[in-house]
Amino acid sequence: MDIRNVLVAQNYASSLAATRAQPSAGAAVAGAAQDFLSTLQQGEQAAMATMTKGGDPHTLVQALAQTELAVQTAVTVRDKVVEAYQEILRMPV
Image (cartoon, rainbow, N blue to C red; front, side, top):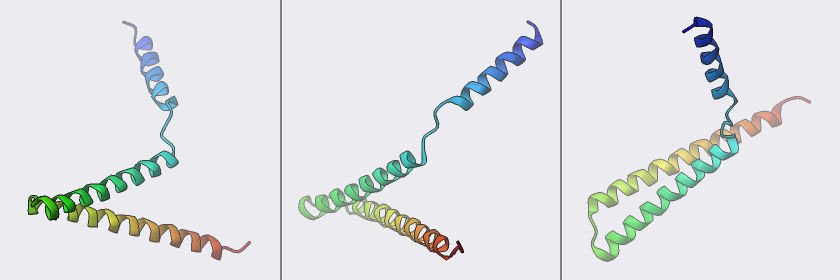
């Protein structure tokens, strides 16, 4: 096999990967929001199951810890967005 053919095939493969549609920032944000919502729903379901059906307390603690982490992450992201917006407002025109 000729080395030029191998190089052409490698270049084609790398070019093909570069031209594939990349997920947009909007899709990433939507996915993160969906993950956040599902985490909150799972925490709520675990809490309801523990309170009404006598579910496993360890599952409840784990679900509450995941929910707390998700809320803290969302608050941190919100704070960064607000901070960036305020920086934009401070820029001279």
